[in-house]
Length: 419
Image 1: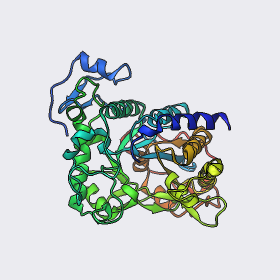
Image 2: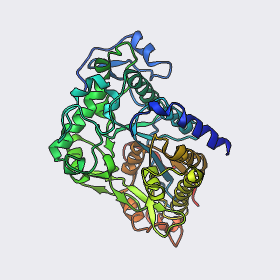
Image 3: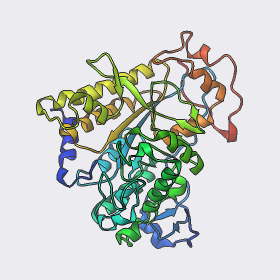
Image 4: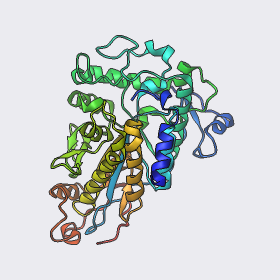
C-alpha cells in the first residue's frame, strides 16, 4: 500500500461508526470580540453580524481572484472542478482532510452543504420537507458536536477561497414524495429552509458562543446539485427566480458549457470507465454502483476499484487537456465506501492534475466568474469542438483570427502561454 493510500484510508476509516448518513436582517456591526472569534485569517474589514450571529458579513472573500479574459490566440486554461455532495464534518474528518489536500495542491473546491447537517436531531421537527412528514430526512440530522465541527470547516473552507453551495436537506430520491416530483414552489421552500438552517445554526444548536460563519449565505449561495440528479427541470425554474447562477444536476459530455434556463448548465460528465466500452459519470457513487453495487463488499477488489476510478478520471482529464479544454466536473461524497478506496483515488487525482501547467482546479463559482468574463463569441467557438477534439489548425489560429473586444470592468487578460 502506498503512502497516499495509507493516509487517505486511515483518515477515512477513523471513527466510521459515528459518520453522518450519506438574508441579512440589518444587525449592528460587531466589535473586536466578533473579529477575534473569526480568527486571524478573517478579512480586515469590520465584521457585521447577521440575524442571530450564525452568519456575518466580513467583506470580500479571500483568495478569490478577479477573473481574467482569454487573450486572442491562446489556449483556454484547463479547469477542473472537484465538488462534494452533502458536505459535513463527522468523526472521519474527511471535510477537514480534503480541505488540506486542496490547499497543498493549489486548488479550491465546491462544498454542497446539506442543510440538515446544521440542525441537531432534537430540533428535527423544524424541517418540513415537501411531500414528507415533518422531521423526516433520508440522511438523518446532526448532533451538536457535528454542527459545531461542520460550522468550523465551513468557516475555514470559505476563508481558504472555497465555495459553499447546497445539496438541500433531506435527500429524498426516487419514489413517492421524492425530489423528482417536486414543484417549483416545493424547491423554493426547500432552498428557503436550507438557508434558514445555516442562518440560525447557533440558535437551533445552542452553540451561541461559537464564531459566526464569515459570509452572508443569501449572497454566497449561487448554485446547487439536486439529490440523485433528480427534479432538475423544476429546480432550475426555482433557482432562476432565487438568483442562482448555475446548476450542476444534469448529465452531459465533456463539452464547453452554455446557459440553459438562465443558469449555467455545469453537468456531471461522462468519462472513460476503464475496462468497459461505455463511459461512466465522473462521481465516486456511480463508479461504485458499476463495480460492486451499493451493497457489495469484496475487500480483495477495493484497491482495483479505486484505481479504476482514479484512472477513469485521469483519462477524462487527459481527453480534455489535450483536446478541447472543456472544464472537467468531478463529483464526490465524504464516504468510506468499499474501504475508502474512492477517497484515496480522488486524492491521487487532485495531486496529479492540479499542479500541471495551465490547469486551474477551482470551485464552480470561480468557473462561472471566468465564463462570464469571456467574449461570448469565443465561448461559442469553443462549443464547436467535440469531446477530446483540439482545433485542427492549432489554438493560435482557432482563437486568434479576430481580437476579442476589451473585457468589461477592467478584467485582466489571461497570462496563459500561447501553445
